[in-house]
Image (cartoon, rainbow, N blue to C red):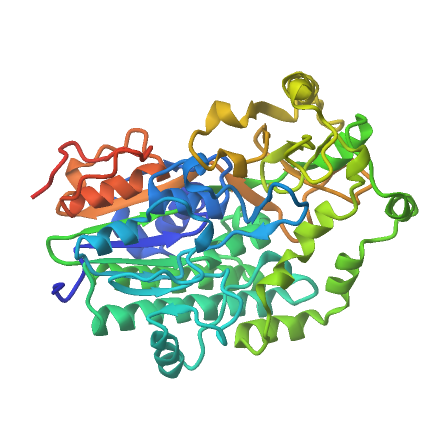
Length: 507
């Protein structure tokens, strides 16, 4: 049986970055974070390629690169069809940390960690994260935990998404983020008291959403401002810090506490629409009817539908969980990237990919309407790479692209077929998106997202073994073997991560 409090407790701030958190800690807004930093060790934590929530948290869970885990983005491109699938826990093709711990008789508790819907069976409990469709479906393991949770807390909202802010007042949106943070924190503290575990992890997705939405405001670090929006933002971080302190107090006296994030955040300077670039360079063609609409500036049906919904009503509906939103509805936007393309005349397209860009060859024998012969694939990829690395931002004159990799250059594993052929990494401040249906190649920051992901996340560690950890170059892929080590478990030989502790077994 587990002791009253866990031996290892992990708190995750999605998108946490020290450039924001250190000023907040030093200002007095986050005193518990300041204490954690001063009493333990902290560093940047390198994310995955790409630095996006699904592959990064899957790397945390598995210790594997996307070529082994099978998770590359929010959506999966499926061979033989141009219909993307939503990434879920069923997409993961290697054992997770929770599974390995459970199989060893170690009891686990997992709250809101992404890519855990449907909830996996474990020795303990799981509450699925933001990708669960609604609370009217089974979103916990064991299933009865969901009813107990809602009975205890009144409701248990799914985290908002950045674009739920559209048309709402800043204060309303921030109040919703605060409420969600409180519900997740209350759930964690309640379960720590009532359902003992050996390993416990709770995830706060709201830290990602607030930075996407209010990056420019946060970056002022004007902690004494009387501006209502800024005051509400600092209130969010005070609430977050209160729960951080409560969770730190729940670690076993001889245990270890980790604070981690999946990636960091930085400002957005400019964005590039990949499918517009492919179209301008003769690699992609759109269906004629849609092309005419685009040239006359008509928005896509999907975007029109989103804009017609009353924003505040949508926000309230989502926060109160009254909708029957299903997984299929979340495919509307990515399908809008695929559906307008005339594949019979397209050599290369960009379907999935957020933050970093991707390019997929329309290969004969692999894609449903492939036109590129396999023997021409390498020369075509080399041609595209040569062109992309010379793209310049027309405003600043800076090179837009830092590097373009063939997938086999950065990934390996049996799931390599689930990854796009080319991975396009922009220079700092620049971002790429599929952009099907856009008229312009270059775009300013989206008005709802002035902040976006960077590779450097965070790690802070405290506890009996904090002085024995090597944080010189930690990576998120190292977290699974490091945690296994704390339970005297040898990591599987196939994983890519390494144990961050200087001694293999810690007794």
